[in-house]
Every structure is written in structure tokens, then in C-alpha cells.
Image 1: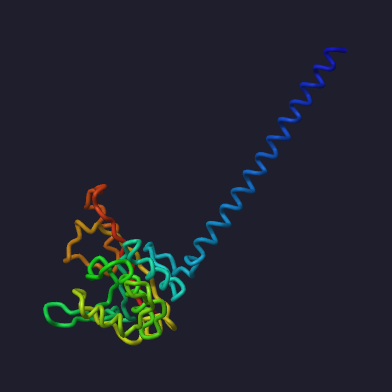
Image 2 (image 1 turned 30 degrees about the vertical axis):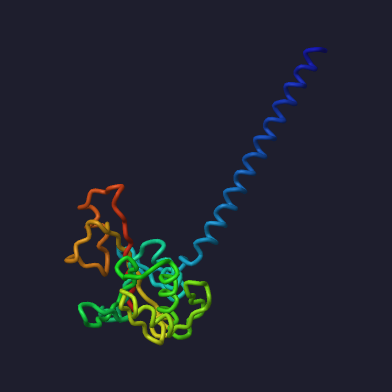
Length: 224
């Protein structure tokens, strides 16, 4: 009789273990599904139509993808270039160099002499929306007009001149672009290399990675 009781206890223990194991597996499966949903939601801006696979890292994108990328340009150290359908640079703004204003087709806040984070944030907003820009701020936190910000830029060392019409309305609003990615190390960058497409793989393979070097992503947009 005693052996039968022990056997029943052992069977109950095994059954309890199996049930607990089943519940654990089910919980882990649900957690994985939830995590995947969150990842998909976070990355929804990248869910775009990809061009035919040619072995290159390119895709077709519109303003929904490009505008958030521009906002991240400074904080995530991007260089963003724009070209028309014929591969010619699209002028985003002008900048004074050696006493002459030159056309600029890129956004690279490492190269442009801007002040604090406030001024860099203002620059992105003003570049995108021109005189329709909202949210521009003075150093004291008060609202700033587009014209006041233009004057501020021209008075400091940046010598940048922005257009009254932002690139959202003039370039991005009704266009799609072929997006091309590249990568290089700022400390090793050679001005003779072509910066517009993929300086990335071939160039990066010739450079020994160094923890002290700054990796910079280049994103080129070619208008369709």
C-alpha cells in the first residue's frame, strides 16, 4: 500500500513538471511573438518597396522614409546626398566658401559650421520646410522665425544661405528616390573617392577598423 502511495506521488510530481514545462514553452513563444510585433512596429518606416535584387543595397523610398532619416542625420552621423534623374546634384542650399557662394547637394553637419544642438535642430527644420517651418527656437527657448534664423546663420561662421521654400515641398513631396547606402571612416576619408554611392564595401575593406575611428554612413538619394 505504501509503495502505491509513493508511486502516485511520483506520478503527480512528473505530471506537474510536464504541465509547468508546457506552460513555460507557451509563455516563451508568446513573448517571442510580442517582441517581433514590437520590432516590426518600431521599424515600420523601413517597410518600403525594394527594387529588383541586383546585388546592391538599394531600395525605392519616398518622403515617409527620407524625412525621418534627415532628422537623424546629426545625432546618428549620416551624410545624405541628393541627385536628380540624370545623376546631377540637386541643390539643397548654398554656402559661402572662399568668398563665393557654392551649391550644396548634401546634408553633413560634421562639415557645416553650426553652433549648439539648438542651431543644428533649427537647421534641419528650416532646410526641410523653409518659411513654413515651425518649432524654430532662440537660445532662450522662445520661438524664432525662419527669417531670423536665416540671418543668424549668415552672421556666424557657417555662412549658410537657406531657400525660402524647403526641400520637402520642392524635392521630396511628390517624388520617389532610389536609396543607396555606403560607409566610411571619417579619419581615413579621401576626398578623391566618390562619396555619392557605395564608398562602403571596397573602401572599408582597405581600412583596418580602429576603436578610435568614427564610422560614417553615407545615404544617397537618386530621384526617379
